[in-house]
Image: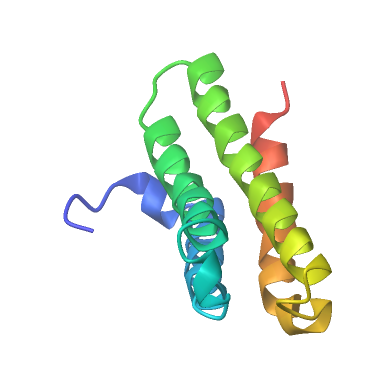
Length: 117
């Protein structure tokens, strides 16, 4: 935001940011009794995507950079799992999460390509 660093222009960073915003919107629709459980975990995992892409982009070594991207991809998988459980608990219908699902797939694929050795 203030530093205007190169990673903010990466397609994966832009896609990840869209996923974060979508997760925050979805989390507002979870039941109140999930406020301190699923809602917080979903938001933490979403934010972790962006934070790890940003931090990884600042690393000099390829190995270190990939490690942060792996952590970011793990957070994408975590989000997918949380939403799967939310659908099983009938908090949402899968069809209601189409946009978020598309962003999950897109971000996962982009991060996977960045991790390839």
